[in-house]
Image 1: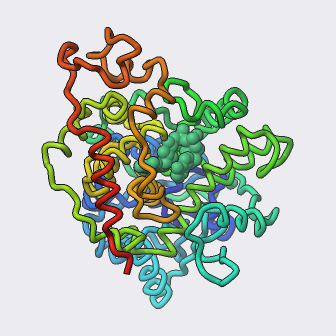
Image 2 (image 1 turned 180 degrees about the horizontal axis):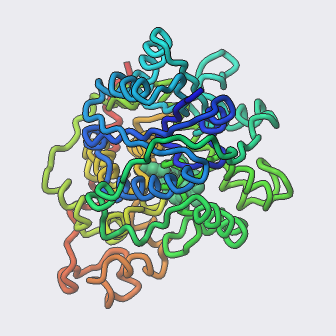
Length: 468
Ligand SMILES: Cc1cc2nc3c(=O)[nH]c(=O)nc-3n(C[C@H](O)[C@H](O)[C@H](O)COP(=O)(O)OP(=O)(O)OC[C@H]3O[C@@H](n4cnc5c(N)ncnc54)[C@H](O)[C@@H]3O)c2cc1C
């Protein structure tokens, strides 16, 4: 019997439940990846991210060849056509079953639910699995039976309900019978989407596994302290690979245990903290599943939609260009534009600056991040933005606004990070680097807002909101 595995955000052969089950239950297997440029556009996916995914697909294709599994590409431009296009391909290739790992944003859920129903009513078995999370969304409940919207109790429940079984890894499957179907050529996609930043981002399952091991062995223990300082190379930079599924979160957690006496929630404070960040990622996946409105462009706290956001286009454009005149903010944006990635501390600083000091709708920032980040991820990006804008789950209280200058003094005391990304300020003395008194002297910019005044305006605007 022949079956198909549909790869989505799980571009790996190791610890891939859908692939393992598909191979265990079928003599012959084909792999499918759906390329949908309109979907990329609708999601505002960054070119550097698409390029990484295509390069990762090429690497996956080579791994699959060793298993005698050809990788086919289905180009389906309209979201609504995916189901019929996929069905057509499965019939053409004589596949009896379809296997895939779940996705949780609202449109993906809708698509998968209708595929599940339609294909079963026809003549194709559909088998789905959870690989992006350890606890499937919907299975962790508060005492009152509701869904968690606060991280700490979510995390407690996550550990309480964890079983050994849930942390079992799936080995790379054994090779299948050979079939007479050629794999697709990805070279034109690779060419069309290549970017000047590609060289910064390695691909390949083993390479990325090595990156995680190297991080855990050399930087894991110092992570809790170092992770806040953007000029220190103190975090793992694995977000692009968790999101494309080149590595699984489960494998990451098990690796972390190896460096922490087989423990996850106690022991070394650095490793324990890293584990808790992986769980933040899982938390936001539960959030978009349990509260679908957040992936429909709506705030978790509905009343915050009454806020009168500023439509100052010049402010928005200067924020996007890294020309606000606030060095730490501009450095963060420029890091993203020049690498596809931004340090977490900076993501919080620039997001708060946009949504509070500039009082610009967080959705503008959310979109701009997606357009530029190599790790752009609907759940984590939305969670981070709504946290920063005080519109989301477990969000920062609206009156606790990070002051970018104070953050800069605290987390980039020597201005190393600022100088790296703002060459204009290379000669600016250290006691001025966080807020130069004569910025034009360096060909830099005057601040677009007064930090104290704009902070007060934001607090007033949020304070006036009615919660009913
Ligand atoms: C406004 C804003 C937007 C964000 N947008 C994204 C996004 O689009 N994609 C994305 O993957 N992360 C996003 N994050 C979360 C976080 O900034 C990145 O995951 C992290 O910087 C990635 O770097 P790292 O792999 O070195 O993380 P590490 O510090 O090494 O952490 C390990 C992993 O834990 C997860 N993680 C860490 N911090 C968070 C967090 N705050 N929320 C959710 N998961 C986390 C990531 O998967 C990360 O790879 C955003 C945060 C904010 C404040």
